[in-house]
Amino acid sequence: MLTTRPRGTADILPGQIENWQYIEGMAAQVCREYGYREIRTPIFEHTELFVRGVGDTTDIVEKEMYTFQDRGERSITLRPEGTASVVRAYLENKLYAGPQPVKVYYIGPMFRYDRPQAGRYRQFHQFGVEVFGAQQPTVDAEVMALAMDFYARLGLTNLELHINSLGCPTCRTTVRDKLQQYFQPMLGELCPNCQSRYDRNPLRILDCKSSRCTELALDAPTTADCLCSDCQAHFEQVQLYMQDLGIPYVLDKQLVRGLDYYTHTAFEIMAPGIGAQSSVGGGGRYNGLIEACGGPSTPGIGFALGLERILLALEKSGKLPQIQARPLVYLIAAGDRAVRSSFSLLARLRAAGIAADMDYQGRSLKAQMKYAGKLGVRYAVITGEDELQRGSVMLRDMNAGEQREIPVGEVINTLGNR
RNA sequence: GUGGAUGUAGCUCAGCUGGUUAGAGUACCAGAUUGUGGCUCUGGGGGUCGUGGGUUCAAAUCCCAUCAUCCACCCCA
Image (cartoon, rainbow, N blue to C red; front, side):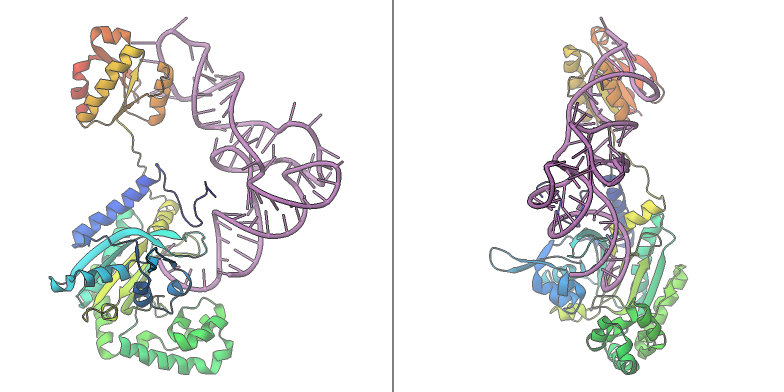
């Protein structure tokens, strides 16, 4: 166990980290262009925040949270998602008192105690955005557009955006009643899971993957059928803006989403070919959440995208760029005197902003050359007794396999111009 | 939480129905080439056979448990 990482976690090693930096950099860039600023909240919070914020009937709260007592006997939970923390920060720091809307994004680890499988981990990473204080349908469209733009810039164009409207609390009460009426005669035929959903949250029956339930739910009333006129109008406008932006989507009346706080627009993005866990992102509007957390009545909307799954999709479609962090120059020294001279040249190169490295193992010239080849550096700067006496170095172009002797004093200038 | 598959060198794997000192390829290090990488050849280091227990004269091999990984259910990113 000493040398085994906890189940469902991963080490991200040099060679892989470049991919993460690439994705995170893209997220930061897109967000900057859309006017979203970064926010960083703690990785753990008081347990009650998630119970209240995520919903106490959700699977996340019921069985997937990493909860523990700290030394002050507070109940603490490693965040299972990002929205609750951001809402808390919005309220605690009274951001509602400043100019609205507040548009923020976050990137970081989330924790859920779940059985790991392809694309599912106990510690995973999300890139998410939240907008507080704006209820116009343009914001719904912008948030979805941002997500799709982000994917597209990474080269993921074969994704499916599913959207639906869950309506306001009034609409949800209507659907709930209608669904219970609809399913009542066939209650016995539903899977055991859905039988309990019937009372607690009949909406989720629509989302069930069991083939019999899907069949039975085929003619069931959906949220979209029960929208009040305001909600209907909002949803139609959202779709209109999406069409104006030229972003294709699938109207998916079965789409429900697992977190209790969603209202109105709900959406999910699916990637083909990355396994059973095909959802690479999802989100929606949560107009009641901020109030439920003790704040002023404030509309909110956001999404969360799973970075591990995006990485999987990029690998599958061969869209990962070949990025390799490597120094430009490797200094090679034959003999003690040459080491001394190279080592100080190394410092000067670095001071000039040129990425450089050299041998620290006392290896032979040949072995140093070999290592330089493996590092994949563009240039080798070789110093031996002969060069030392002439005050020069041998500058070797590793790709071309050619070299020429230049004065030590010209190394920085010569390499600086590459 | 449920089900299935798999754990042998850093990596990919061989090791037949239990039988001496557990192998290959690759990677790593060194030499061939006493001042020059990539190709080739030679040599070297490196393995508690996931872990614990059991059966047996004898276990990498058979049995049980456990841990981990992968895949699926569930759920979600």
